[in-house]
Each structure stands twice: as C-alpha cells, then as structure tokens.
Length: 220
Image 1 (tube, rainbow, N blue to C red):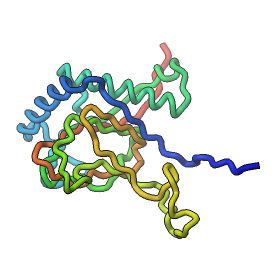
Image 2: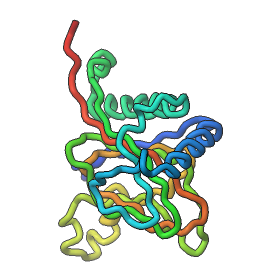
Image 3: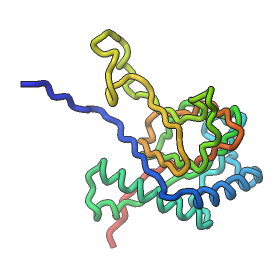
Image 4: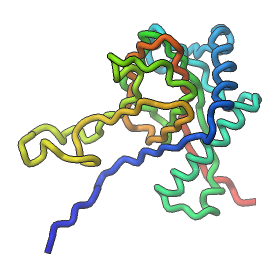
C-alpha cells in the first residue's frame, strides 16, 4: 500500500499566447497609446480601485471598439476563455455554445513607478490579462511590473515546521508571479487576489484586462 495525494481545492489558472503576436501588438500599442493621450474621452472616470500615479486605466468598453486589432484580440481571448471554461466545467461543445458572455474590458498603460494594489473582481466568474507590451526589463529589479497572485489558503502557514515548510507546487504556501511577455494571456477566477508590483522601466507597460460573467441563451 502507498499514500495517494490529491490536489484538492486547486485554483485553475490558464495561459496561452497569440501566435506571431508582433504585428497585432504593434497595432494595439499605437491605438492604446493614442487613447491614453486623450484622457477626457478614454480615461475611466469612476475607477473601482484607487488609481496610482503612473497608471492610466481606460473606461470599461474596450472590446466594443470596431478597430480590427481589437476585434482580433477579442476573438482570441474569448476563444481561449471558452476552452478554459470547457476544460474546467466539462461542458460539451453544444453546452458551451449555449453560454452567453458579458464583460467589462479595459486597458492599462503603466509608466515608471506605477502599480496596482491587491484586489479581486467581484460580480464576475473569470478574469484575464493580455500583455501588449511588458515594457523594459530592469536587471536589478527582477520583480518590476510582475503580475502576482496570492495563495487563497489563508491558514496554510499558521503553523510551520519541517513537515510542511517545503511543500512543492501546487501545495506551496507562497504567492505565484508572472513576468508577462508580449502576446501572453493569463486567465484566472475573478475571486483570486492579485496585484501588479511597481514598474521601473522607461517604456510603457501595456496590458488589456477583462472580467466576464455568463448566462444561458434561450433555445429558439
């Protein structure tokens, strides 16, 4: 006999990448920087989080824009999100097609010193972040601009000894960080706490984010 270990209470986090993302990201970067330069029209006037100096947050209707680059990004994100939902819920293709998606979508332009405080996204089931440009790598600050997720098992490190101090992933006690790369998409449950650490590069760090919730389409 031997002990069997199960990964109970696991958190699904998805990753994907746009193939050959360079041309798409160049179009997105030009468009989003132009919108950053027009804050009266495009800045979020009612942010849910305190906005930090160095961070531009747009209003929440980005994927309603008609530009071809936005439409291509939306198609990619919704396709990958559909795959994640199908894998984690066990839906058949027909069941998946009956789902109706609702969303808020926006972009961030983060400049030197900007960061996003620890938060969740209430009233949504899935969230995502797509990296248009990660900005500059800063060799002496390896955590510059990383997207960090916090372990939801709040009591897991209440008592530490040699029996649990060195748990390997996915059982470890600490946080999980992504140094995003251009073209990378990260999908995660909206309740999962996350933040963006201070960014120290010179070039802008540009990301697109979304929150999604779902209904079921009526037959006929």
